[in-house]
Length: 184
Image 1 (cartoon, rainbow, N blue to C red):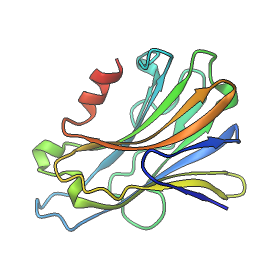
Image 2 (image 1 turned 60 degrees about the horizontal axis):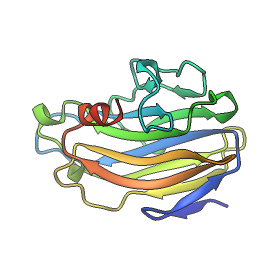
Image 3 (image 1 turned 90 degrees about the vertical axis):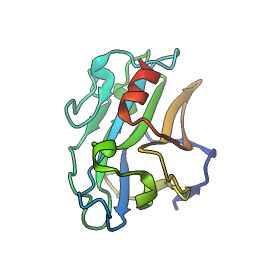
Image 4 (image 1 turned 135 degrees about the vertical axis):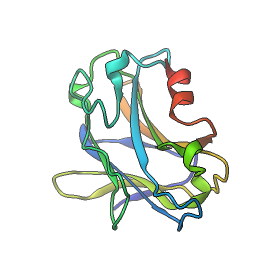
């Protein structure tokens, strides 16, 4: 049975292989331009910095060097039900220096398109078993991010020999570049 997390809650992940599903719906846009939300993954070490440029996994770099993180590709519209983007995780492949995997969603060209997460609804991140499709945990973002153009949905981090998920739900106004600056 799935565990529904609230912001700030943590949960141990007892599965070495799982898929992260990210979903959202957009309000009818007054900007007249379609929305393109993008999931990005930052694979980091103890210093909370990306291990290398190749450890930034997104639509132009789909697989981390160790093969532990694989982005399944960019969804340009977010149309339809279910997950809009997915990331496959295999913690058994993670290099020894990997201690954290941060999950961020940004709005592509948000400033030019005058879009923000206040125009996005039903946002969630879920972790599920790709073989059985059983949902292990789910976190639904309920905050109103009226000026933010990027949101850190959650992070997977290592404590001792355990991997845990933390429901973060923190927005940032500057977008993807601000996260790149933060984690580089």
